[in-house]
Length: 213
Image (tube, rainbow, N blue to C red; front, top):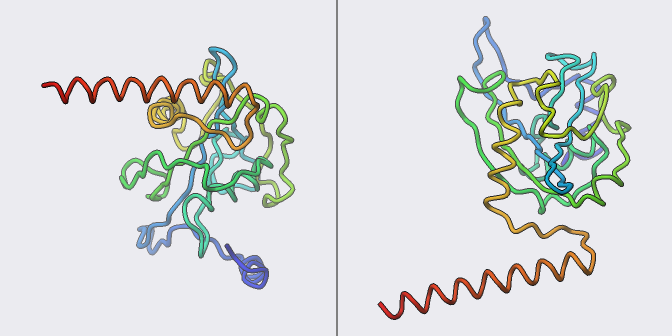
């Protein structure tokens, strides 16, 4: 994270960690972070998205999941958490963000960025209690913030071809994670304990079968 002095220098000199171009050719690639934040409500799944404002360099007035550039002295989780706070008001402990994919394909990225895609599933209570805020964002960076149902993604115009990523990233997150949220009710914890107990029993049964072979 930048110190206050470094941040002031950055802002005063209009520094940007965009890729460097020379004669129209990119000569240095930057690292971007992307935060795929979901919540589930029965069979419905929602993605946290924001609408790009007039102050953004491209895809103005299109929707995107939270994204931005990695700052000096940050790791990917910290950078993603910072961008989420700046662009949506969501405050989340970086350690809860799961690295889902690293995209380094120069032909499949904006400005040839290397993108670190992180994800997390909030509880419904956490999601609906979130107070959207752009207080920490840059001027005219964010035009709107909302939860969008995955069933309605085609009703929106998406930046950076993110439409094709939202469902696969959710599926990847579900495959990899037994979701342990940082704020859970007693009932949620008991249900999770039951799921883990059943999973452990199944593992032990399979081990016993293999031992008998």
